[in-house]
Length: 462
Image (cartoon, rainbow, N blue to C red; front, side, top):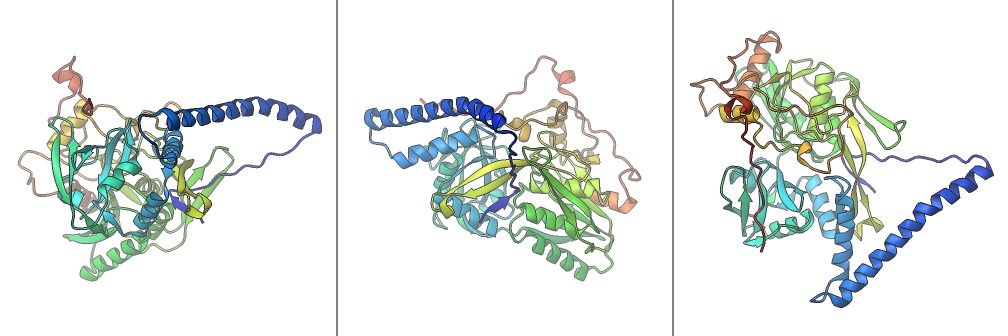
C-alpha cells in the first residue's frame, strides 16, 4: 500500500494504431532501449571493478543502494531512495511519533541542510535554524553522505547526547549539544491573544486535522466570544497531502482546495472541500514565512485563493511538487520517494520555486527586513540547483524593501507578525488596516553597489 507525502500517482495508457505504426514505433523505441542496456552493462562493469580493486572490501548492498539514491536525487531535491530502516523511520514520523532530535533535513550538493526544526523538540530548544548546514555529527564529517545516512548518525537511544557541528551564514562553525528524545511533536496547539485565537500548526502528520479541530474547540471553550483566528504556518515544512486537504476543509464551505497534475497535462486530480466551516465563518488570518513549505503552502494557497483568509508574513518556501512513496517488495527492500506531480492552488497557480506571496508583507525583526533588502542568504526551493523549474516566465521575488518591520521601541519579547495579524482581524482586512512606517532597511545596491553576499561554504575535507 502506498504512503503519500504530498502524494499523487500519475498513469497513462498508450493506444495502439495500425500495425505499421506499432512496428515503426517499436523500431524507434529499440534504439534508446539499446543505449539503456549498454549503460546498465557499464554499471555492472564499474561495480565489478570496485569489488575487485577498491582499497578495502566493499558492501555490495550499500553500493547499489547508494547508486539508486544518487539516480533519484539527481532528478530533483525531493526524490530519493529509502532503505528499509529509513522507510520504517519515515512511517514512524508520519504517524507522529519517532526517536531523534526533531529536525527536518534535506541535501544540497552533498551537504545536509536544515529545512526546519520542529516545535518543542531538542533541535528547536537548541536554536537550530532553517538554512543551517550540518557538517559533522559527534565530530565525524557528514559531508558527502546521503540524507538517509546522515540521519542514521543523528538517531539513536533517547537520553544520549549528540553533538552537531553547524555552519551558519556570518558565523563561525559551532558545536551544538542535543539530547535525543522520543519525538512526539504536537502538530497543532492553541493559545489566546486577547479577543483572537492562535492555532499553531507545526507539521502535517496523521494527527494534524484532528489536532487542529481540537485546538479550535479549546479556543472556543476558553473564549466563546472569540472574534477571529490566526493560523500560524510559519516554519511548517509540510507533510501529508490528505492532512493539508483536511485542515483546509475545516475552514471552507466547499469548492476546490488543490489540484495535482502529472506528466500528462490531462492527468488532473482535484480535491474539494465538503460543506461545513468549523468556525461558522469567523475571520481568519494565516501567517507564513520562507519556512512554510509543501502542505503548509497548500493550506495557505487554498484559503487565500478562496478569499477565506488573508496572508501575513513573508513569501513561502516554494515547494510545489508531489512525492509518491512507492514500497519495494512490500517495503522489504525499502521504498522510492519519487516526484510524480505538481500541485496547483484553486486559481491554477503553481508556486514551484516562486512561493506564495502574502497579502501584507511583514518582517519579524528589523534584521530580517535588512536581510530581505540586501538579499542576504534566504533558504527556499529556488536555492536548490536541481529544483524543478517554475512556470515559464515566473521568478521568485528578489531583493526589495519589505512593507513592514517592527518600529523602533517595539517590545522584542512580542511577536510582531502575530501583532499585525491581530490588527488585520481587528480592522477587518489588510486594505483597512493602518500601515506601519516603512522600515529603515536599505537596498544592497544603495549600501554597497559592488558588494556581493557571501554564501556559506562547507569546510574542505583534506
